[in-house]
Amino acid sequence: MAGKYKKKQKETFSAKVGNFFATIILSVIMFCGLSAYSAQNSLKFVQVSDVHFSTLGKNTTFKLTGESPKLFDDAIAQINEMQNVAFVMFTGDLIDKSFENQLTAFMEHVKNLKHKWYYAYGNHDTCVGGYLTPEVFRNIVKKGNPDFTFDENYYSFEPQNGYKVIVLDTIIRDRITSNGVISEQQLKWLDEELNLSQDKTVLIFTHIPVIEPFSSPNHRLTNSNDVREIIEKYKNPIGVFQGHYHASKIRQFGNVLYVNSPALVSYPDAFRTVTVTNHKKSVTFDIRTVNTRETNLQKAAKIMTFTPKLYEGEAKDKNISVTIKK
Image (cartoon, rainbow, N blue to C red; front, side, top):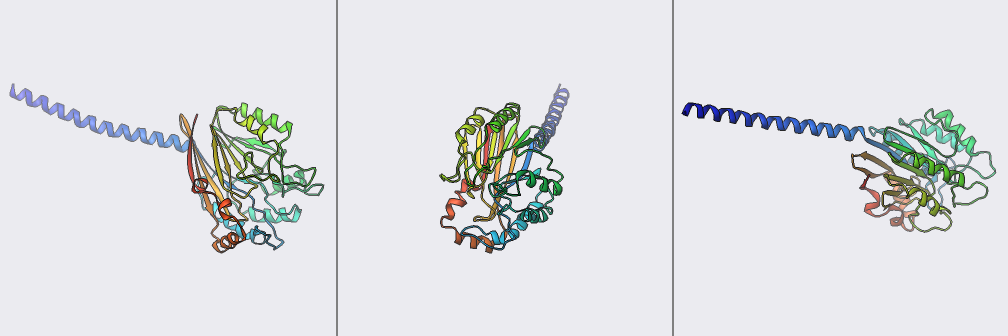
């Protein structure tokens, strides 16, 4: 009996050891599986706003337009060092003056960017009654950017499975103004695009913001309430990435995250990296601010700005991770 008892004890101990290692192996497999799921469902992009590229060599009261080529080259160099960037989005005012030679010069610099890039029109990019119309602007870009294949001022695409990118055109072109509007035709198109994308995480890019970082009656989107009504009636995770005000501000309304981003040409002379991760029941937006490495120019820009904190934003407007339930 004693011998049988010992044998039974030995078998039980072996079973425990086996179960222990089986649990470890199962945990590793589950962890690797979840990691692989997150990696496959993550999308990283860069938002660069208000480059105001200029070869005319003059700074303004608060924009380092004379130094814009140097700031732009620094941003390109930093972005090229980043891994797994799906695309770079310029949210308007790529150039400071709406001249063909300025856009051509911009293209000479941006050709060094190693990642796909797209843009939304800014109010400085196309000229009222001038030669550099949206069509001419777009055709110049197409010649130097094989990834840009769109024929309209606003457009959409799917950068990878589970994501929809929507680029809006907010520019008024029949008069000189810094205000913006989205036409009735475009509002209808936006509604249709969102309706078809309810099973996706949607990333909207616009120059003039749907929600202002601060009040400015001369820079606002005049029908912002109509735009918000369309966007916020949908319940899937939506991120809206905006420029124009040169200011950092992040606000959340339900499942919609509104991200105002800083300008490259003025303090804080920065851009954004955004990593969006689709989980089974939620989506996480990890937003980081990347400052220029041209620190002397950044210091000069800060001195030129009367209210640097307004444009720099609070800590939560610079770097934040936000999770939105599906």
